[in-house]
Structures are given as C-alpha cells and as structure tokens.
Image (tube, rainbow, N blue to C red; front, top):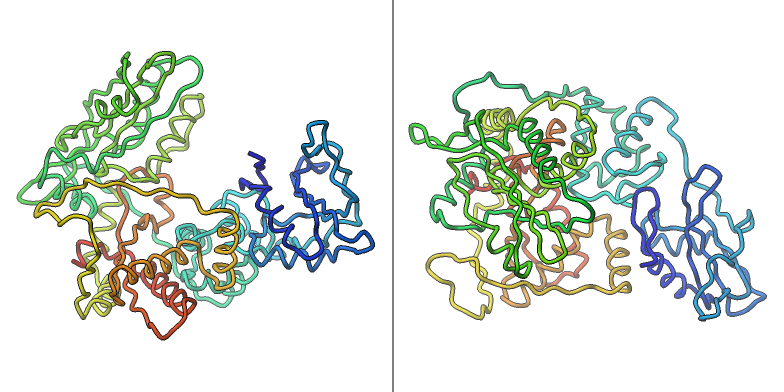
Length: 517
C-alpha cells in the first residue's frame, strides 16, 4: 500500500508524491521513509527536474506543501537527483536512492518547551494526539487534532493546570506556545473531580440511558440499538481464556453487569453481582451475513450482562463476534473494551478505575438540575425560538406512520486530488474536515429541498470531563446544529458560519437532546 507510520500517523506516500508532481519544474518525484541514528523515522523526497540546470527552492516547496498537507506529511529532506533508479521490472528501486545529506535538509522548525507550563502542555498534546514528538510551535490540528480531540484537550488542560480553555480559543490559538500564553493570563478555575456515590440498591439512570430505555420499550423486538462487531481470528483460539478475560472486564467495569428497571415511575440502573457470562463456540455452515443474522438478537434490558460474545468456526476460518446494547456503551466504549481485552489477555495489569458509570450518572443529573445548566438552556432556546421548517426532501417512498429503519447506504471514495483540495480549504479557513463536510452537506440538502434554514443532528462523544477517558458507558449526545444560509454569500461565508455555530454548539453540549425537545 506504500504506507508508512510517522509520529504515530499512517501516511500515504503517494499523496505527497502527487502534490510534488504539481510543483513547478518537477518532472518526477519519490517519497520514502528513512530512520535516523535514534531509530526515529523521517520523510525524504527525491525529485527529478525538467531542466537539469535548475535548483529546488526548498523553503518555497515546503510552503507549497504546507498549503494542503498537515505538518507530519512534510518531508524533512528534498533531494534533487538526475533520474529515479528502477529495477529490472521497471519499478522504482527505493534501495538505490542516495542517502540524504545537509544539502537537502530544511532548517528544522522544531522548538522545545522553555517553561513549566509549556512542558506540561507538550505532554498533554502527546497524550491526546497519540504522537511521540510535539514542538511548541506545532499546530494541534496539523498533528491530527479535530473537534472531539480539542474537547478532550480542553478537559485535560483543566485537570492538569486548573485553567479552563474555551474550545474557540484552541481553534484560534492551536499551538502550545499560544495556549501557554493564554493560560498565563487566565485566572485559576479549580477542576472538580467526579465523586464516587455510596453503594445502594439502585441508581438513577443517565439522560442517555433514559432515552435508550424509553425507545426500546416502544418496540421491544427492535435491534436498532444493538452494536455488533466481527473480527477474523488468526492462530490458536483459547475459548476458556477469552471467557476469563471478559469476566475480568465485567468485574472492572460495573456498567457491563448493569441492568434496568422502573421504580416509582423512574428509570433506574442496578448493578448485578451474581451474573452469568459464557462465551459460546459454534460450528456453522453459512455465510458471514447469515452468521451475524443468527448472532444479533434482541436484549432484555432487565437482564445483565447486556453484551454477548461468541466464537464461530466457518469452514477453515475462525471469527470472534461481539454485540452490546447501546444503553451500556458507545463507539468509544467499544474501542476501550477491545483495547483492554487485548491488554488483559496478554497478561498486562490495568490501573484501577477511579470512577464507575453510576458515578457519572449522579454527576450528570446533579449538573442538569443545577443553575449552571441555565446558560446552556438559554443558548439552545434562543437558537430555536422560531420553529425550524420541515425539510421536504424528494424521498423515493412515503414515510410510514411507525418509524422503521429499513434503508441502504451509498459508499464512495474521494480521490487523492479532491482530498488534498478539501484539506487545503479546511486549513486555509481554520476549520476541521468535519466542519467542511457539514457545510457541503448543508448545500446538498438545500439543493434537494430548496430550504435555506437547515437543522442537522451531529453526535458528540459527551466525554467532556477528563475523568471519563477510560470509562465504558453511553455518553453520546446529539447536537441539533442549525445553519441559515445566506444565498447572496459565497461557500466560504457558509463555511465560516458552520464553524462558528459548531463551536458554540460544542461549548453548550451538556444540555441533552431530549431535554431540548
């Protein structure tokens, strides 16, 4: 695939090469990853020029690439060579490319932290972005940051440095040195940890759990809120060890042995101590689709655990199947579960959890009943003081009276050239790819409906508090982001509006969707 991993990022070398080929006077280009004496990988670009007497302006070519590529995709060396070495099969012979020297090196702009705040911020950046090297002038979004990671960054800064940094400030000042400057001028705002609740017979459900429970009661046979996954297994399978590992996970995360009931008209969660969990192993003669149809069954919310695991043998292949009800988990939870399962299975000891999901439920419900939520409520009520129009799209079929979830997806891939152009537009306008796609989606809906006032539901992780980063549970909220298009303006005007409205929505994301409705 001609992919490499640099600073924790998977990079398509072909994307850099295609950009170089569009630079003036470049005839051929090859990019490879090399290792320095410290085993650190770096990128090296080799170019063949149209005119041999010309020279490459390294600073200019770097600026050109920076217009559309993130910083981690910019080569450290630009070497001019007379021709690209080829193998007998006329393929590029990467082994024959010369070692880069100082003539091709671009002055390294990496700068280390110069004070304690910058040092601590560098460590937070590394942790949030999952990269090994961060300079104080590195742009958070060039290193792979996006809206979700920016929310996590703000939360961790609050926990580590007792200063609240608004999301819009991270977009405005995305480097370590800029945020350090903002922190040095800000007042202290003590970080409040989520407290553990005392043991009791049952606990109040979170807002999202109440939503899920109610929707499931409307149609108890509905499997829409199942979260299934399937993995092909290579090598030997130890069913007993897999089962024992999952039991460790169930002991670690109380939410994995939580079930739901109503008490005095209130939806509550109860934590089970005498649960029964087994991993079945089955032999099947069917397709993967038929296997999943058999495996994905309805859950009874009154019975824990609300997830199941199975190992299936089909012909000479083995599969690992997992299904979880959305009421106890979300997409991030599934990632945490798989990561911790892998670590426990390989014998690693995990650091004990400081809080459980029921502690978050109490924390969230207290906040939703407090005066602090009024500011967010006012924001959303102002946005929707006029009722939004119904979006009349040209559907193929009439909507049924009872909502069904039948439908299909249309999948396509955007080519390298368009992707580069999109990255360039997002970078020039200081927004994320998600915001750019949201603006494009609004245009798409306008073109198909003729409606200029459009509301799009955007899911957010709901993990604003840093204490929640390793928690399994249902945290997701939906933000009803409303954009009113000015048809006399340009697309860039719309993009700026979407960015502004998205940032305001993210800063007021604690008010739950059902509360707004």
